[in-house]
Length: 186
Image (tube, rainbow, N blue to C red; front, side, top):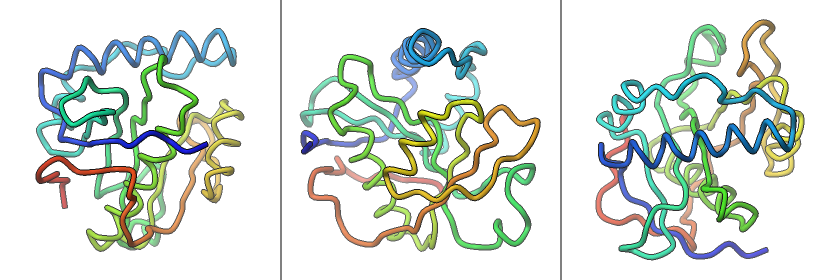
């Protein structure tokens, strides 16, 4: 499946309502479809606002002036409870909070955004991109493995402790266009 062209811009504080709604929709879908409690904890707008203010969160649209259909957060530092000191010493970016609005799911949008994140991470000097997936969501693990990620390990006792990694890939994703400067944190 060829995903539709996407346009990304930095998230702004006015996106908080949309982000909270998407998270709630995703949590409901995960509970019904997979019996998962992923994202069942209350939405934390202060944390999300902090990530927006850092420039770490982007919104994706189907048209340059369109309504957002997806989001992701890309950070320069991983959590020391998850990643070893040796891993943290490697230049990396950490992918978090990837959400595609439910009406747009299944169209390859999440995969296209991942490819953009890999290219952007490489352009910013990262060698790898990492993520921590919900430990009990085997379907999500299979999805990431199918997208070329490698399972590093699962950290016991951590709800999102299934750790994945892939190589940051230089180049440009022709299906994702950055609208203006995307000031991801360094």
